[in-house]
Amino acid sequence: MVGPDEIAAAVAALRAGDVIGLPTETVYGLAGDASNPAAVARIFAIKGRPSSHPVIVHVPDAAHVPRWARETPAAASALMRRFWPGPLTIVLPRTTSVPDAVTGGQDTVALRVPAHPVALRVLQAFDGGLAAPSANRYGRISPTTAAHVRADLGSEVAIVLDGGPSDVGLESTIVACLDSRVAILRPGRIGAGEIEAVVGPLSVASPEAPRVPGSVVSHYAPHTPLEIVDAAALANVVAAHARAGRRSAVLAPGDGRDLPVSAWRTAAADAASYGRTLYDDLRRLDDADADVIVVARPPAGAEWTAIHDRLTRAAAPVARKP
Ligand code: TXA
Ligand code: MG
Image 1 (cartoon, rainbow, N blue to C red):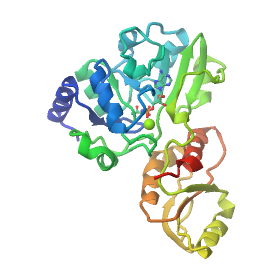
Image 2 (image 1 turned 90 degrees about the vertical axis):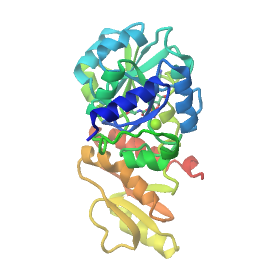
Image 3 (image 1 turned 30 degrees about the vertical axis):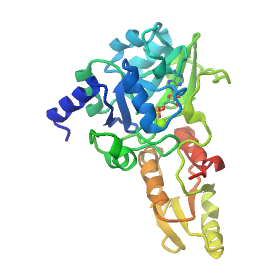
Image 4 (image 1 turned 180 degrees about the vertical axis):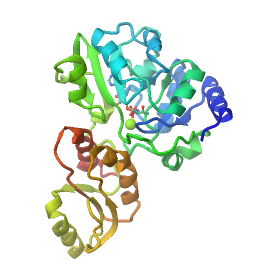
């Protein structure tokens, strides 16, 4: 458990312009004072992320929104009421007081109230906005445990609050509420159907839609090349790799007992469980000293949309760089 002293130390560090590892229900964030450009610059430096990429501002509750957003359309208010605290990020027109470092110079700002109790305690004590991208190096797999954050960034982040494994395990759904249109910019646990139930039919994000670095194809990638294959073909694919002298690390249903693999993670049958452990599974398979990660294609169906999205990005060939 994270005690009051740890929360106080974290808030003191944030007030001093430092950054911390912060658990959220989606993934762990690398959090800093969103009103302090130097703190935001430190986040970008630690992540190795291009400074043109905007970051999400996390706030304690919807009452904080007007400080960051100059307009809150009715659709956005309805989404906040329905899904906050929770894994939904809402992009709105920004106020002039938002540092350019937060928005990448855009006219919009992305806001979210996370549902994790530790994140909420920190935000309430801090009583302001925390810029927090996922606490991984740019382009790598997002962390879903404090140990992941320490493994990736530990030497550069003094405080990593340990809130246990993230419950959702995938980054928040991002929705833009601009020009009276609502469009999904990044799929997540909260699906299009749930959002449409609140705001009506969605628009399709246009090419001029605000930039989402997660939409760079090479995002979320392990170091080991990853391929997605039909579940029915998995045994043959693994056998072919073995014949060619390639070791496979596999994420698939079942136990793989009879297959020549160097590692196996059992895929859950339901999307929520699969998403919760996906990034930890990919990290373990990436660490298995295999030549290829082979993933059995998960089922089709709306609740699997975010998982297909992340797997497809992890499989993108441009990601296969050191
Ligand atoms: O679940 C999450 O959203 C996690 C946790 C820590 O809250 N955060 C996260 O942050 O995934 P990050 O920086 O890895 O991804 C944030 C995404 C990026 O794709 C970024 O481009 C997008 O949010 N974003 C931020 N501000 C935006 C804006 N003004 N317009 C469009 N997209 C924006
Ligand atoms: Mg990220």
